[in-house]
Amino acid sequence: MIEHTAVQRQFPSGMACLRCDVGLPIADDDGGCPACAAEGHAANLRLVFSDAAPGRIVLPSADAVSLGEGGTPQVEAPDLAADAGLGRLSLKLEWCNPTGSHKDRMSAPLMARARERSAPLVVGASSGNAGLSLAAYAARAGLPSEIVTTPSMPAGARRAIRTHGARLVEVPDGAARWRHVGRRVAEGAFAATNYRMPAIGTNPFGIAGYKVLAVEIAAHGLPDLVVVPCARGDLLSGLLLGFLELGRGVPCLVAAEPFPRLARVLAGADYRESFPGRTAQLSIGGDTVTFQALHALRESRGRAVVADDAAARAAQARLGRAGFHAELSAAAAFAALVALGADGALAGRHAVAVLTGSGAGAMDRDETAATAQTPPFDHRGTR
Image (cartoon, rainbow, N blue to C red; front, side, top):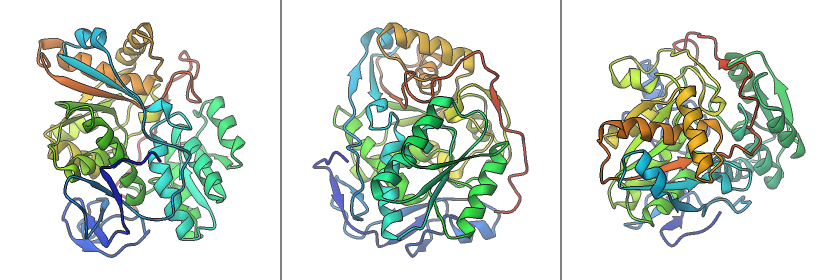
């Protein structure tokens, strides 16, 4: 990764639950907090570091696995700021990471941890970007990998994943995808994505990689709000942890989602429920909500904004006319800002929109194809 003076490295002294803050030893069980699970709640963990210097973030000190991720451009867009009713808009171009998405920030420390544990196999569930990133970084780490997907994965993503030597397994739907990963983990594989039901999120070693994004954003001046496309909330959670460790303040975090999930939870629904919906925004589809995403929004006084496919396509077209070719899921971040600023609520404020992937990348596909839908299933079932 691109190193920063605000980043230090040390091995974590333990873990702590995001929900109840109970302390736990370092482990890769990936089942989240056992105390919360006993109460029927799925909650992820965070890494704890005993000797963190003030004003710096801490990353795990495992031998680095890197392809040069991080240090992506943050570009000012005054014309787009005016469209959203903002005083200032910065676009964080995460498609400039090695495999074309923000996922590389997570894959680097995650594969370092897998290699440290001498994992016989790295396995993950993905619609595209995460699978491509994991396949590349597993190859860099010298580890075999298996990516489990559904028929909706674009052909470009499939080709790219196979280029890195990963085994690609197709199953009928998202639920089957997670079950397949669970079977592999039971056989000894290292889980590189969430596969639990109810959903928990990715291994905390991976989420720690997203803290560096908070450092890079803050280096340009702490914004009032940061908008990210959101599915299971790994990026949201990592950003929150990063801003908290930096100690310079936490901007309002905004989750852009293709249909109401977090928005329904913030309005009173149980986050453990299923929230089915149809979308062509493959990178942020799915019917689950995680506690880590809810936690990030609550702790940052944030909110969730629905950017449906029509709004995302309009945002994608507007970004394109300004020179930025974002994939549909990434364009949802700008669509969310346009929705938020429609009544003048963002006047004079500074926002950062995290554009997570390029429309010219492996996730590009025929937009006229049928949209993806995850069949509803009971997320209160077996973890």
